[in-house]
Image (cartoon, rainbow over all chains, first blue to last red; front, side, top):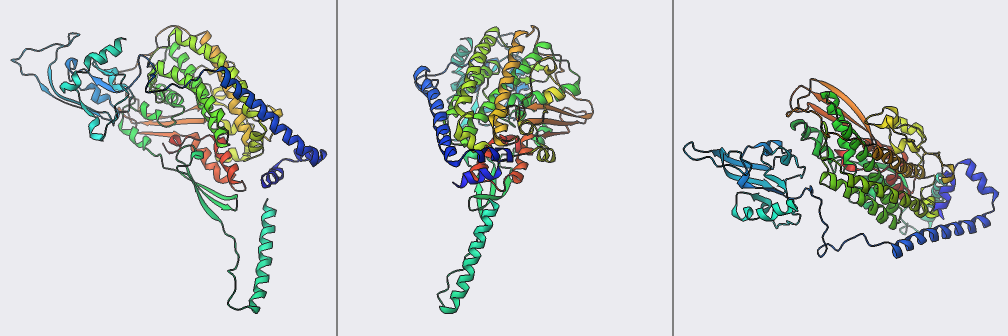
Length: 186
Length: 405
């Protein structure tokens, strides 16, 4: 009741004149008719959705959506192909990549990556703090050997924040290599 | 309404006099003298109707807002200061996070600013793609505005329908850029990934379907008499207020002023495209007065249709060619400053970039449309019912990430 009073007081003069012409009795029933008829119109659309549309939601743990080829999920660095050039760490806007390396001693043979780039640095540690990462993808674009990529893993909840620091020179993580490269080639 | 209040006060005063008379008879049993005062109510920061973490301190007189004071800063992430320590490419992910519902529009504005200062030529295909994605982003952003506005007013179903359509646009963005919301897609000098023929085909199907959906939204929401009663003649922002506060975008167009930077100061390809600028009062059959919540809502709905029109024109004549221009590996802007403005879904977005010739900007100031619109709330708030105030906040469509930056 109060709402209608306020709305009437704030309407312009033109609409007020219109309302004065029709009697409140007629207006009352016209309002009811308008409300009911527009609700029925809306309901018919909803009913149409219920009957003719397929559900668009998917039941997540059982059914999984296929990600696009360039989807940006958890970072993965292929440590075997990394030349420790530090470019990804420079490009990272949130500084979440930590690299430790030293120049390879001269008397040792210089190994090469898969695309033939000599690995002049010995990679000791390559850590990404995934909890800091903002998934912008800038590190992947500057990599000369294309060893750092966004994998398609998106389920990596952990119990503590510290567990999000992945050292990609770790053997357990190198073991992911085949699976992640397989995702990319799919 | 104010008169009604005064009557109440008179009534109370009258009572008071009677009690004073009573006092003479029964000493010691005096009832506490009746008085009225404003009740302070916090709307937010975790209120679902405030669209993010906006806190509005409302002083209410019964159910009528007497004073509304917005408190901002709950989503302040220091983006402007932080960008002074980043190279020009690294700022783009931060720019994304300002208006997280229209990231592409933010990126386009920033990329145009840097390119203009750098003097880079952007390839024709990249410009086409940029125009295309920024119009798609406008549809996605307005769909959220439409859905959440209906949600604010108590209708849940339109929200789901709007998000169903938005999901298709987000899927398209995910395919071209790799992310669903924070794209980092528009780069300085061009765009990151190319659009394939299949994706354009997908867009064609989507647009046909979306136009039909849009008609259904109008039947479902716009013509609904409850929705109309809630929005008609509520929270009127007239042209004078718009000019005083510097409102832009759908708020200004809802007040009946034909102002759109895509026409006034064309950037990208907008001077080659045919489209109209819908303003409040174009469709008098909708009802209400110019500048109320309904006309702001209706301007957004019409803009979506115009965006569909623009995208249809674009995908017919998209040229082949490269998508990245020649940009130096380390971007160093010449000494100087620039102000560049673009029309993002919520209004006029401006970047003021000051460079001292180094790898990082000296200062990057962002003129955000939502900040301006939040500042109108104390002006339009007083006199509204609390439920109408929720409708007013929803109708200006704010994103707090952009207000606080």
